[in-house]
Length: 171
Image 1 (cartoon, rainbow, N blue to C red):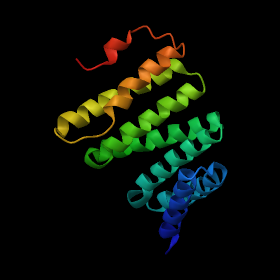
Image 2 (cartoon, rainbow, N blue to C red):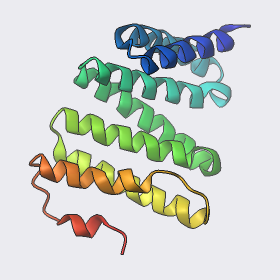
Image 3 (cartoon, rainbow, N blue to C red):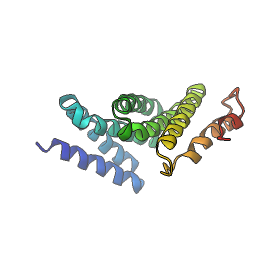
Image 4 (cartoon, rainbow, N blue to C red):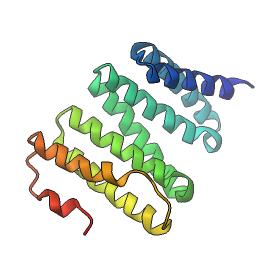
């Protein structure tokens, strides 16, 4: 009966610990929260699948913070996949979260030196935010500057992109 509330409390604990720089402890909470939400989402996907996707994204970020990049990428890939399905089924609720998950996935790809895949994620993220902006004019998503920054960062790190940065910018 209280598993959902417990999962939420553990997830919030992980977030709080991360905000004060206690990353190993935050990771432990993130791992526990992800496990709890995995069980809940298996039993009631319509209720908990979005929460599970968020817990996976938090876990991926937590793993990155302690330098466990390959494991982080696995969690971020799973989170992005869940958000992709959720956004397809309910774009008004999950499209922004999916775009954010794609960004996290791009960062994860970069961390393991998969630069072409990181670039693809950057381009997909930018496209998702274009759609969000078109569908919601006047609503700030707070993301475009980051979207346009990511390709330039990867180019600086020697990703060897074939396209110049200017092709990624809005005219």
